[in-house]
Image 1 (cartoon, rainbow, N blue to C red):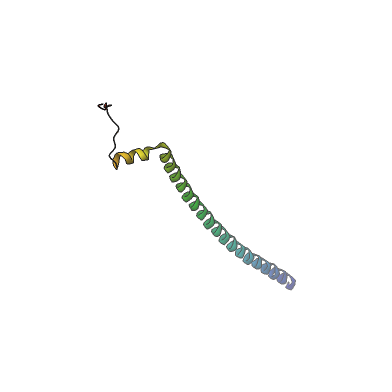
Image 2: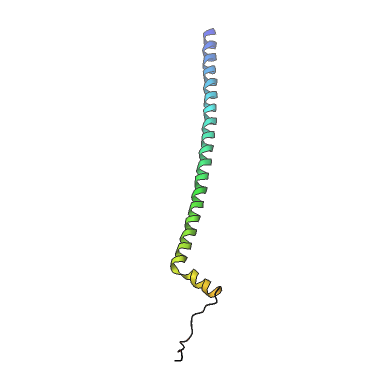
Length: 91
């Protein structure tokens, strides 16, 4: 009977130690997953910022290539309009 009590006490202590170690490992795993989530979120935010800047640069570059920006500024600031009819200069 004494031997059975010693064995059950030993098994229970091993199970308690195993449960405590498993709990500590679970806490550690959860913390590492949280850090990974934060790093992933920061990387995605940086990627969104980079994509927005890239889109803005593409739009500005296409406006520069098309000449529409220059045309609109000449109409608004300098009040230049395209001629409606061709006038001949007197000689």
